[in-house]
Amino acid sequence: MRVRDLMTSPVHTIGPEAPAWEAIGLMRSHRIRRLPVVQEDKLVGIVTWTDLVRVRPPVIGSRWTVPNLASGVKVKHLMTAAPVVVGPEVPIEQAAALMRRRKVGGLPVVEDDRLAGIITESDLFDVFVDFFSIGPDEVRLHVPVVSLIVEVPRLVTELTRVGVPILSIHTSRLHGVEAVDVVVREGDERQAREVIRALTLDASTERPLAHSVEG
Image 1 (cartoon, rainbow, N blue to C red):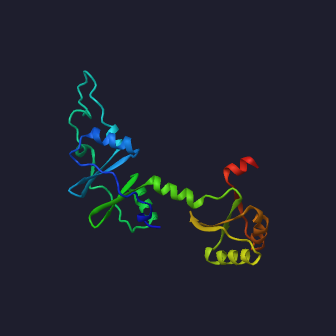
Image 2: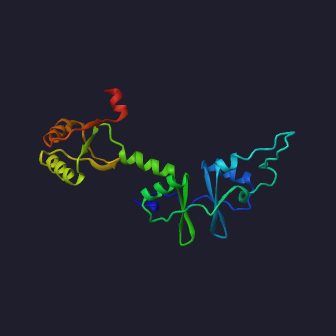
């Protein structure tokens, strides 16, 4: 899956000369937390909700002067110039790694030097939830394995041989531990477990939360 598949496009933008209060109004009205800053069709920065709420009116009698959003502060005074960007054809896992490495919650998507969209951590989280969700009459069997190359074909072949439909299958390699997640119908769980045991493997079961409470 590529960034193009998840990004929001077209995207709300603002100019660098716009007053800061205008950026706040846009974010509130559209329920977003960041605005790419564009000048003459070029991305010149990004301003976030955090950038804006850090600005407070000066305390009466204080010797320190803090800019007031109503006193001429513009977007260009608060934005991050030359923000981290990503291309639309970049795989989403690379975009996620880039966000984590640079500690940002969103990336403007740039194609041919023009702003094409924006992808955020919420977009990636939604995909993660959809990717691993299971239905009310389904179970996920988590099967640690020694070798994905060896065990995945064996597991698929044996489940197919006994007539257990595989609704989805995912492989993982976390902290050096390889595993297979197989989703089957709840009615096929016992037979699937027998296949797994015959392959001298073991499995833990995950069910939808609502279904577990009802059962």
